Image (cartoon, rainbow, N blue to C red):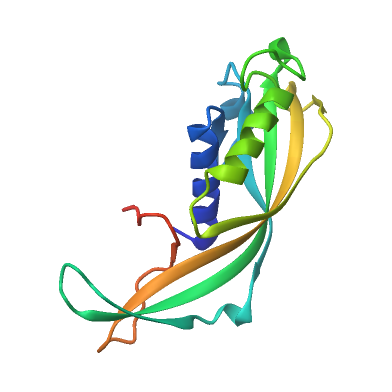
Length: 175
């Protein structure tokens, strides 16, 4: 999975764990399947620092093989676009937890401040105004969230090939 995909997946997982539906990629039909508010997580901007070069962080011993492996890191700055959609029946504000856009935004904000993996640092979060989205026929509230994402990779002493860079604080998923 790409680095940006790992970040989007981690943010969506944090939002879901906080009690609001969340999706990483979406279509109008997919949004309309939800009877409650749903947060759609997309990418607005990505910047890789130091020309994307990996920085040496040190060594560690692999517990399974007892081999020494070198650990490398990479930092990425990115801005996510988080769009909260709510069905017309719930209204803009909503009345239950994560029901309407504004209630869901409260849940999303709490998740983004407290439930992210250690390799994902929220720099700023800015919400817009709730409005009507003609395309989806739903209320929509947008946010711009700026992050610093830290990735780590390992390489055995006798190898020059890295394993995949993984968002710090997450477990590598099999695809």
